[in-house]
Length: 403
Image 1: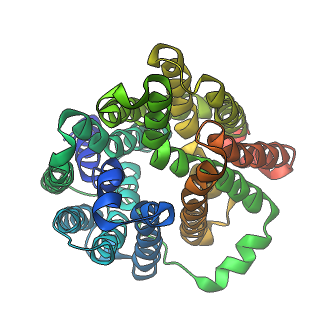
Image 2 (image 1 turned 30 degrees about the vertical axis):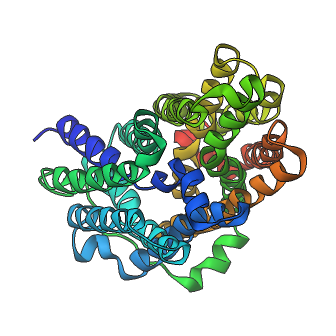
């Protein structure tokens, strides 16, 4: 089987397997009403996934599960578990049980996302950056699919959104087993080492790349999580209570915004190797940071006015995503690359829990119109960090000297 065909199968498999991530977010208003959740409790539907993902990533790295079971089998088994946990949410009778299942979903998805990257890297050597960009795009699109399903079903059929996401994950599990192996260039996973963490945190170049990533993560997942609520509030402001099922309209817009990130991943992967990683990350974060602020100016306007800005935001917010992990893999000492990547991912996803929880509180205080502007702090930090990294001699190790 050719590498191109493997990438096609793997991308579709990962697209399907990632559907559970925002499945509860897509029906969050209904779950909040059924389970009597306040803003913090509603945020917990996604925060629990982020925390589960961090724990799952650490356990997987420490035990090198992708080598023990092979990355393909780990992805398949984890996708099955993520589907079961998502189905569990659909039939949970309390928030405690439901959020517990969401935590399990996140832990399971840690066995889907990073091992999927390992498979892609194992099949590509020359065009590895492009291949991983394609795969991250598929993951992004897959994460958005529950919003598409929500837009197609009545609000009282909310369980359908969760069950379709579960079925999608199981389909992804079956598809990934058609990949014949982990690839001709597959390398053993580096075991996570706690003792290496202080050394990596003192490495100035690696630290700056991680600060760039943290700035990126401050914005990304909070924007994805609360985009539907933002758009729904905008429609309610524009049309009033007669807006009908404004949440269904918000769901399709959210699908388009998150899904547009797939194009951003492809563009970022394509041009980072040509123009340089710090260039691409800075441009992407400048654009997305501006969108964080400007989106308040189009709040309450029609989709024809708001839509183009939201799509640009969706593309820019994730265009740089794969570049931070690639940068760390190029900057960290070879023996510590596995630890450096796990540390970066864990810190980034832990930070997302702060902004996912913070944003609805800001919206409660000042309204949704300008609430997204608080996310601009992240891109501002990220641009500073990547410019500082570009000025250091270690940056010549990035993208073959293109910084």
